[in-house]
Length: 137
Length: 102
Image 1 (cartoon, rainbow over the protein chains, first blue to last red):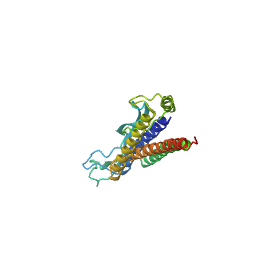
Image 2 (tube, each protein chain N blue to C red):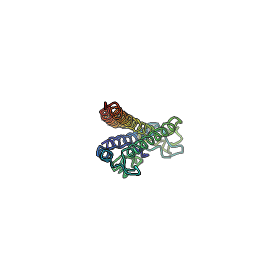
Image 3 (cartoon, one colour):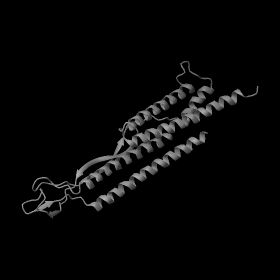
Image 4 (tube, rainbow over the protein chains, first blue to last red):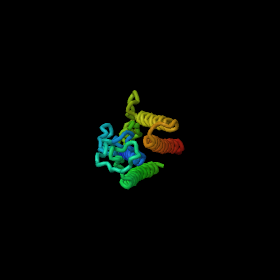
């Protein structure tokens, strides 16, 4: 029924929304990959992670996706010898953010592909709706 | 997500409404008639259009969520297409009857 197709449009939209938020988190990570602390021994930027969960839209009775949590990656921070940096400890080492550009770029590609997949579902749904309405003409 | 009212005409519902009209069983208040069903469906279609308008205006002023705008406009577009297709069918049926040689 047309109701199911309309719901498919809404579900794809929540998937696209989730990937939008994921891309925002990736953008934050890449933008802050050189952000060190401002005082000696201070913590630098820590990589942010994102997780998703499925949620039931009770009004429509369908399972959609939403962002569950934006957390912090607690893995070890790399050290760099840079005594001139204001954040360097007494030994002259600076803690750098645990952001790996390659991981972020791969994550970005994945978000892009997932967004495209949801977009394809939307296009297919619209095409099915259009064809059904064309039957009436 | 804001919930968007959509035009839902089930074939069984339409057939029920038509059989009531065809059987001459139009109720006095017209609440169960085919006309009432169409009026309600058109009201929903107009409501869908208003929702799409609101979302589009928000997007124009820089706010709003782009995917919500797209879904609202999609729903409005599909509803309008369905409504016009059904209207064309109804008008055609009336014209067929009017032009019928007696």
